[in-house]
Image 1 (cartoon, one colour):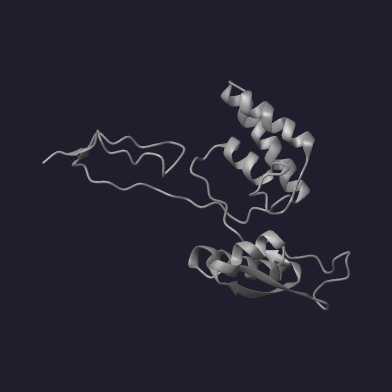
Image 2 (image 1 turned 30 degrees about the vertical axis):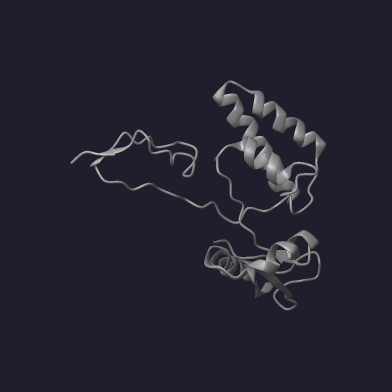
Length: 177
């Protein structure tokens, strides 16, 4: 990892560190990445303090934007840019917790959604993601990885390529004993 700069333009640096709370839900899938984030923030002279919030209070706190840094998970049933872009970055979307709004970028959401050529669509998606990152729209800390495990005796089951949750219909599945 490269060494951090000696000082920041905002006046914070190794001799003047910024103290902030990192708020998140009080369950492991939220707490664990928040702890990792706090560790990483040290490299840019931010001393994070973990503020865990009970689940019943977390979403109201998020909607009020009552946090300095709020670590939240973004979940979706389908791993597709349409679902992610419109839901998390669309102007007026109820799950756009940061309130980010860029109508010009939304027009790119539309273009990538209608693009039939996979290569062209990927190029548009990477352009959108680059611009979202440059805008600091909702910084992505990490991407989760999921996998399937099953026994060779399970027959007739179809593994999905874009979701781990939309293939639970089992009328064509059987055990071959």
